[in-house]
Image 1 (cartoon, rainbow, N blue to C red):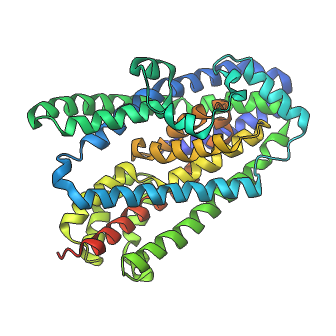
Image 2: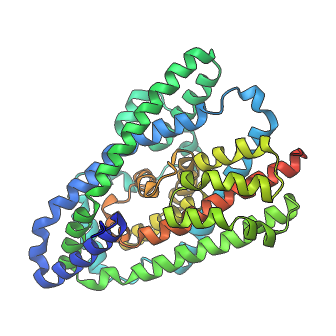
Image 3: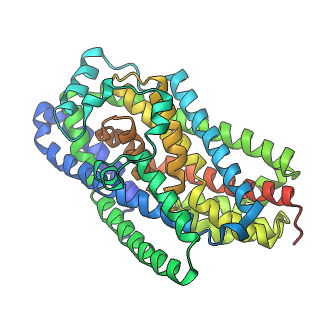
Length: 410
């Protein structure tokens, strides 16, 4: 008998949680600590995973001077399109409001319960610094304190600065540092895999407790949430990528999608940008006439830092979870979502489920309860397949655009 895949286990866990919650009602809260432990395990790996993976992505660029224009153009393209993607997601979430519709008393009780958990500092919800102050605060005065407190924007800043500095020292010394963190990164990824094996049980416990206490009304907005994410991914992919490939890359968008189908299918079936990378490089170089120089640099770089589909999903998910809890996010907090998710895309590992870890980082940045992640895990696998496909389409579009501007020939 074939082993049931993790995403199926999570879906089964969610369905069982709903059933247990309906049958046992408030008694289902007894198993909630299992879910709390799962959330704490996710929280535990967020800081090291983000710092190390982001550092490696930056340090792996090598000689910054040698990279020159290609590196700069690729970076600008990926960051701009990722910011556009998450802006699309945030806009749709604000217009459709997928998390609204719960009774006021249910929202109030949800927020009250998770304030009492004392896992997060909800006192900061009322402190809304100005945009200028938010930008100033990105630069830490004490790196150790930033890491200890889990200040994600400061951690991202530290990782980028550290990664750039490593590229400027002697190669033999830089290799020692990079090899150490590369091994550290592999270790953290293994921890993530272990934690995700507990996901079905954690989701079962959290969903059972929520449904038992508040009823099935809390699950009704989930369909709206999924539709908003899917709509956002299609709108972004078919508009932004088609326009950039056609207008800047001077390549037919129809031929682009047709020639890239093999890579898209692999990305969709595996939910991994890294798994699709070899066939993606072949499609871009052989079928789109992108030079070897551009292909070999831009696509691996994109697999590391270009997560526009993931960023869009994180924007929708963060606002959806905040709406579920009846939390009104101000303009500064929504800009924080855009900034954090855009920067976090650099540290998002190209493996299945990495979006959940970086979503936890985004939620921490705006002080939204991480427990809300349990509500979306049941449909995450399908959405992961779609957003990974969007990610690798963006990688290829970036290569076509950079190749066109560089006018390099194979």
